Amino acid sequence: MNSNKFDRSSERGGAGVKFLIVFVLIILAGNAGVNYIPVAYNGASFRQEMDTAVVKGMATSGRLKPADVVSDYLRRAATDNDLPVDAFVEVKDNGKYVQAIASYSVDVNILPFGIYKYKYQFDHTAVPTGFLTKQ
Image (cartoon, rainbow, N blue to C red; front, side, top):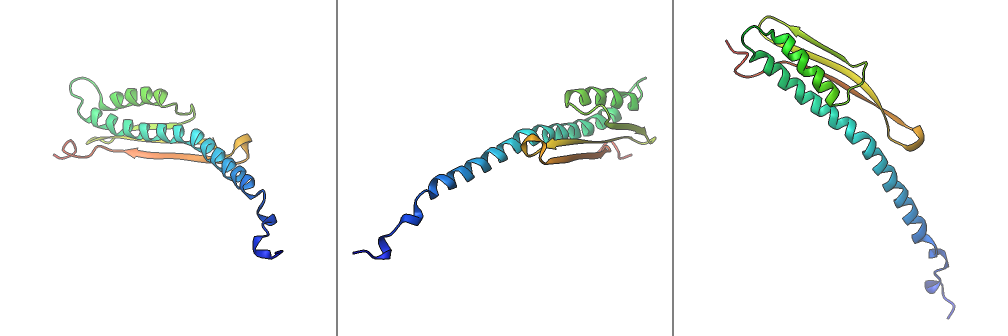
């Protein structure tokens, strides 16, 4: 009764190796998520703040200049969303509307120990839309 269909010596130890590989991949994916998600969230939040700022600038009345209102709002939003100090933020007053332009890049460690860094690029131009731009 020494047949090959009951010989399972080649199957021994396979589960431990597979578990270790899956565990390492889960740890690497978790590390990438922990480092990337906050940067992407801050970028999306700042994009929304830019859109809100230009609408607030268009709705400004009285002695306040719309470009100044947008600049102040974006300055506060930049510190709240942890933008880098070298971020380019510009506010233009085009007569009919206010336009905000922002651009920056952040290096994100995807793999531990700086093995692979992803360059997160943010570039957005916010212009008001809707009933405020119609005349």
